[in-house]
Image (spheres, rainbow, N blue to C red):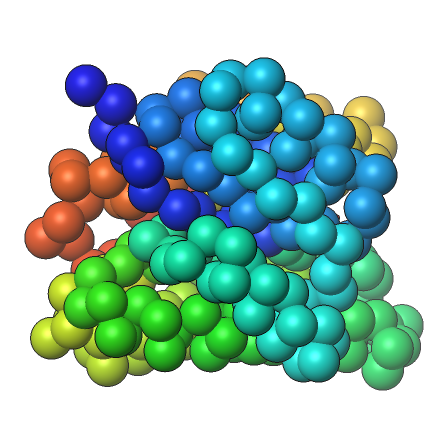
Length: 247
Ligand SMILES: NC(=O)c1ccc[n+]([C@@H]2O[C@H](COP(=O)([O-])OP(=O)(O)OC[C@H]3O[C@@H](n4cnc5c(N)ncnc54)[C@H](O)[C@@H]3O)[C@@H](O)[C@H]2O)c1
């Protein structure tokens, strides 16, 4: 039987990479998906792939850091779909640089998308979830939020912040049947990591006991586990999916 039959899932940053893999995995398991990303083109493309699987999909171009845009999209999604069962806050960006050279703009861009964005989107859907007394929230953090990384003060702060945010949500929402968990991916083969130079990639591989980058589908599998009935008694946790990098 499909694990997410007739559920409605909202996935941010679903236009490509990990978010797209999560959206497609959920759709293959019977969910209808609101695809949220920065560009209409990518959202439409992934929504088309979901419809080809026989599920409903709605495409949105939304900057998750923009409160008005988030509110408007959430209103449309709830009006169209009638409910939201699963929310995956996956939208994320990097603006790497050593602290001494990091501009205020690079700090703000990363914190605004990765942390404020998750806050705004969660707030926009929480009323509906609280009213329904059921829901799953999965926030995509990073191993960098657990162990830090030179050149990623902004990114590490945003991803560590997301863990504290998630644990607090878990405590606030537990009695209402809503779980909130983080996934902390290690290094996953996507457009985001394609930007890394070969030297850095080689040094990263040395830190991964399993000796290879993960695939977006590895994160989608973990998101499915936390979002289906298998995850019903798990809340406030951080699940690392990293080939053994952090243990
Ligand atoms: N790839 C990795 O190795 C890795 C590791 C750890 C964590 N992560 C996290 O996983 C998530 C997805 O990463 P990815 O590798 O698929 O990245 P990606 O760059 O391939 O995709 C990111 C997606 O987020 C969307 N997005 C970015 N800013 C947005 C905004 N302001 N509003 C709405 N959408 C926005 C983009 O449109 C895109 O669809 C991110 O949160 C990232 O930090 C990735």
